[in-house]
Image 1 (tube, rainbow, N blue to C red):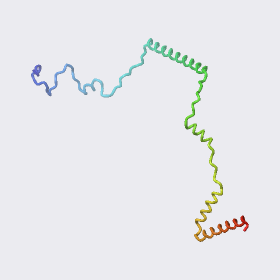
Image 2: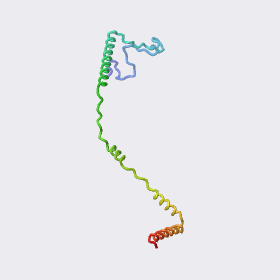
Image 3: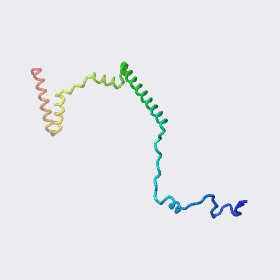
Image 4: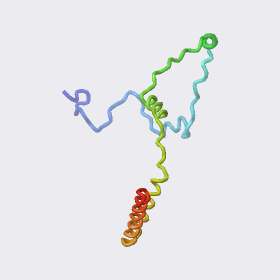
Length: 151
């Protein structure tokens, strides 16, 4: 069944008969030359009727676009400016407005600063010196009380 024409196997390593004349690379080089030859390019479409129609169509499109652009410019120039609606202030804006109205804290008085300095000086003194200063203060208080009572 398999090799009815040739009477052999269905697959063989022998070349099959072909209906054209096979050529080799050597034959091609002999006929066309061994060097690369660049073939020509397609030229421009020179059919004047088609080109004229295309040009006219493009010109009509451009003229229409220019007319529409011109008309739109006139409409925009003549139109009144749109009103801008006032937005309700956001929470952040309201907070910033409130912060502007809050009074700033006043700086501390100088007397408080002097007390801080006195406390620092007392820490540097020895215990005996601190007791001596305390005694002097207490005596000054007693003298002030005696003056008030006139004793």
